[in-house]
Image (tube, rainbow, N blue to C red; front, side, top):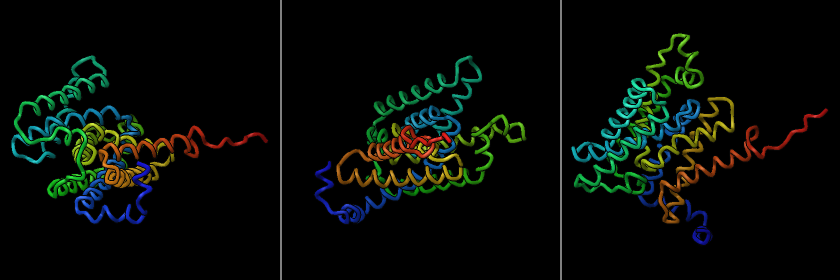
Length: 289
């Protein structure tokens, strides 16, 4: 990999990929989805919903297969099954003594297994690797349009309900005490999560989309105590890591989704080590007078 980078000039590294239409499309979609997931990841991090993100991202798989079999867009089937998994988690939690984390594990593994079975039984041209790991370099114009619509809806909802969602994620009890309908916010946030998982399906796939929904917010959380600044940092780091990941994938011929997530993880590790206030290697100040 080092030999690959050392043998090309910086200008060639930057400009050769964008001479290809498929790369321009991949860079645009990856940056867009990265920014949207980065914004949502701030709420996910504050709410502690890493497991919920994992559940929804895996639960959309059978929806993709069913949508293909019915001749519908993948995004519709994935969204229906994503929301369905959330509803099922809530139902089982309310009707049984099983704790939420156990219910989440049961539901997402069950839905994921159903998706695998459907892929093996329904005769189709669906590439399982495409579903699991994404394929932004091969994304179609129709998929681009669906991703743009989904991203616009997610951003609009998060901006419209920004203050209520922020309070709900920080302190749901206080939000409820001042008259905010936290039940509606709960399912609204889960619906947005399902939409984001559908958008991320095209770039990093089902398995890695949870990283896009968690890592940017966790990184920003180490760097600031202010929510506004946290959202800016998360969006920026996620979009940049998506672009860098696509470039690295192009020049090294590695899996694009894995490349994007590895760049995000590297940024998190830098913040974990060197964040000014919360990094484990932050400079020690002398408090003695």
